[in-house]
Length: 94
Image (cartoon, rainbow, N blue to C red; front, side, top):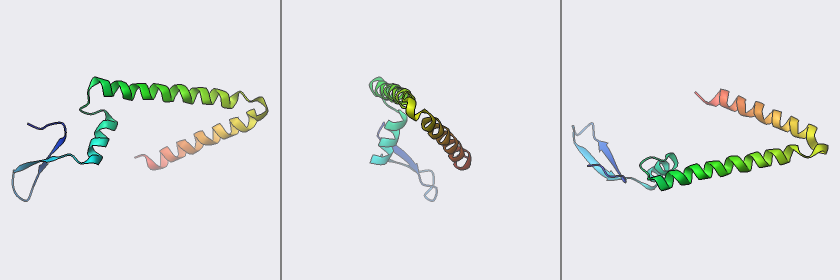
């Protein structure tokens, strides 16, 4: 049986033998980031963090546009950021 902190590795040159190896640190962090093989508590932490980041980003966006004397510069910067983000997505995401 494969446990949560193990990886199955199949050696093609040695035939159908399967070896179980402990997951390394990077694989465990990747699984935590994706929310794979974690309990309800960690899923709640991921969801709570996402909600806090969305709320803080929205507050920052509102404060950024609330400065009337810098509204034109704010709109130009926001438009440039959207164009740059779209260009990066278009060019580098397959």
